[in-house]
Length: 260
Ligand SMILES: Nc1ncnc2c1ncn2[C@@H]1O[C@H](COP(=O)(O)OP(=O)(O)OP(=O)(O)O)[C@@H](O)[C@H]1O
Ligand SMILES: [Mg+2]
Image (cartoon, rainbow, N blue to C red; front, side, top):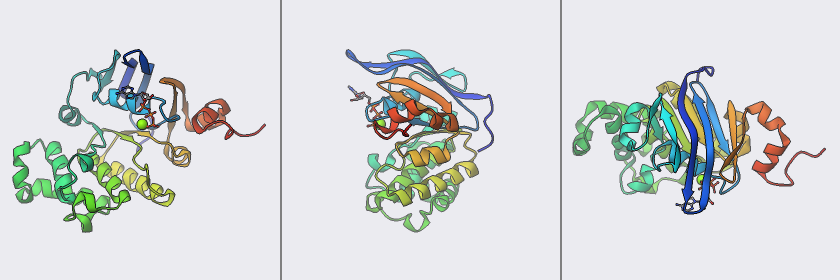
């Protein structure tokens, strides 16, 4: 991606999410600028997925506003959001496990191309859809698996298909919640390299990544937002974050902080 700019693509202003008396997300404000890869880190239950759910309008915040490209996104559905350029790994693989890889990518390609879902029966004959599918499958090394059912793929390949489906929407902003969870350390880097190269080729301007693996986080992030107990406890450029022993120890657990 290009160098960070001051163009704010996604903005949360004092968003919170309550479940009854339980505060899953306190009042969190953040910006995501063009050219950034921002990682959201924090221990289990810190509120990372809740934040992503609110940022992508999947859940309505209890309070606060989320804006994409300067406009309030409250109430928008996933199709409208992806049309505007905000995409999250769709998890189509989980929603439609019986589809083939080609069909799964075609669902996303249809959405990107503004084709109606009823076209789906004809996608194999639609050359625009076929072109998007072929391009994305190639970028993610899924070409040989195009006619396999999604559920027959290895865990790592299913993760790739999940991310590939989001990229088939050609978003400006891509939000990924643990895209490498359950994948071996060696495969994690392969997935990240593949997705970053594909994102660059497609023109993705900014990525938000929820990730527990601090090796990946340190290698790929330009900025790190740390969460704990539903609150934002740090929002720092990557080097500054890793120099902040208190924030690092909260994120990676007690006893893991550098000795002094
Ligand atoms: N629908 C819900 N109803 C009640 N509590 C919820 C709901 N969804 C999430 N929570 C709670 O909100 C808190 C934050 O959950 P969240 O899934 O956002 O954490 P997380 O940081 O993504 O954790 P992990 O690293 O394990 O994925 C947790 O205590 C969780 O149990
Ligand atoms: Mg989570």
